[in-house]
Image (cartoon, rainbow, N blue to C red):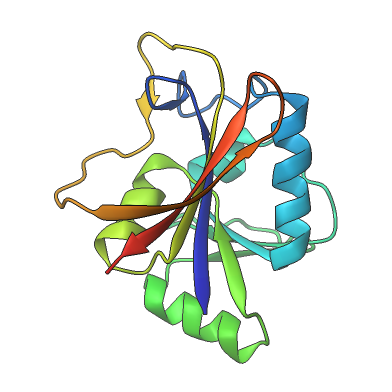
Length: 167
C-alpha cells in the first residue's frame, strides 16, 4: 500500500490559523489538484479535527477518520476508527485499495511519519505567511530525509513539492 500525504501550507510552513478552520485560504488551482488526487486514490485518511473542519465533502472518495470519539450515526463514504494506523492500512489493502492519501491534520501527519508509514509527500505551497497558527508538523520527535521528485507549477504563484521519504 502506497501512502502519500497531501498538505497545503504557507511559505512559513503553516496549515491553518486554528484547528477548527476550514481550508478556504488556498488557491482554486490547489483545490482542483487536491480533488483530482483524491479521486485517483479513492480513499483519504484524516484526523477528527480535519473532518470536523471540512463543512462539505465532494462525492467519489471514501474518508477514514481517525478518532476516539465515535459518532452516533453513520455517514455515506465515511468510516470512523480508533484502530492502529498499520491495521487501518492493511484493511484498506484487503479491500482493494493500492494507495491512500493522508490529508491531515498536523498530528496525523506526524504520527504517520514517525511510524515510518509515509512513502511520498505532495505539499502545495501558497504565497501567504500566517502569524499564530498550526505548523504542518507538530510535536515531531524524529528527523527525516526527503528526495525531491518533482516541482509542479499550479499557477504563477502556487506550486506543489513532490517528495519521496527516504526510509
